[in-house]
Length: 93
Image (cartoon, rainbow, N blue to C red; front, side):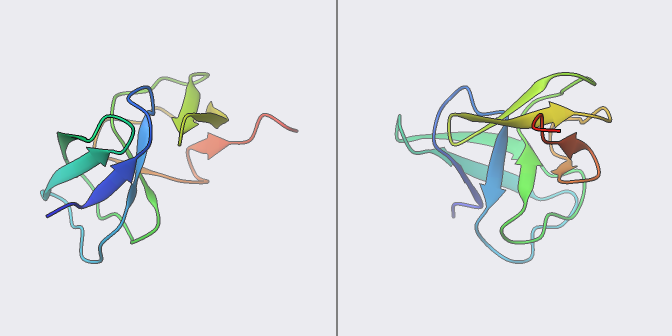
């Protein structure tokens, strides 16, 4: 079962595509551009449509989703954690 998708191997977050991702779930994440499956354990509940960190990220790091810079980290994020507005902000303002 695929739990999350990302477009590019450089993406630092993937999008949960199923409901019921809870802390401890071993996620299968599909890299679309390479047709490859990678794995990460969810350390928090991840709502469907929300982002899950695929690697550890420090404050100031750039977040990549679908191969695009979507913002910067404002609180440390560990692989498997929920990545959302509480720990990522746009660079636009």
